[in-house]
Image (cartoon, rainbow, N blue to C red; front, side, top):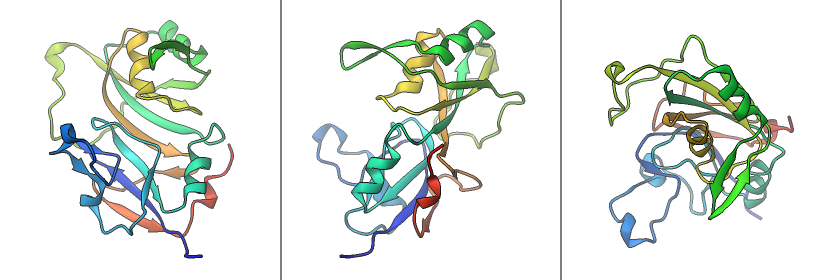
Length: 196
């Protein structure tokens, strides 16, 4: 049985979290394979949508993928929101908030939400977001144990504060750290991810 390989990558804005493009409507999209020389059979563990950035784990081992995407492993995101979010809205996000997923209403599980003050500093994105003339923004740290499609974006929109920029910073005990957009590193395994 061949040894599996594992990678940590900083997914940049504008890339799909996949290696193969099977859809005509996505003909000109950027794929992860453009960011490195990954072995055949490499898959992304979970997804970040095209507009989201940050930590993505890659593996050739389906069992590792299933474990990391389970509710046993925390995922932490930094979200820049449109507006200044009051304490009562942060509490709504913490307690669980109704979002639409696959045509049904779903109440998210309780999660950890914190205001980030001072705000984190990231390099400017290739596509401009907006500037201060459009009003204030704030950054939240949101830590989940689930991962519905575009969940963080749907949660903040349901609270009345759309997400302008979204980074995944941590998966379990694996951190984005100093990895720059588009960079990847190979690691021996993800055994340090651990249950939290």
